[in-house]
Image 1 (tube, rainbow, N blue to C red):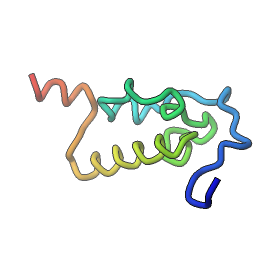
Image 2: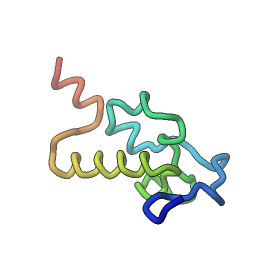
Image 3: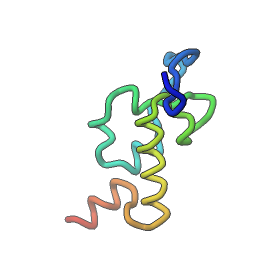
Image 4: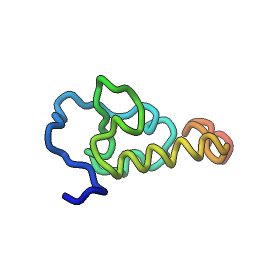
Length: 82
């Protein structure tokens, strides 16, 4: 493991759950790998709570797109496209 990637040691995925923020904001959430969807329950729905680096990055991208107004919740996006 190099210094740029997260180590999975010491993280217990049994205490994980799917990130509600990502589920709401990312239309491709269901296509993510199962580990990329999980966050640590005690930390809440934050980017740093994700178990994997890919999950962290995708969460941050969704936050930035939300702040810039490029995306909204999935329900809102569906209504606009119809």
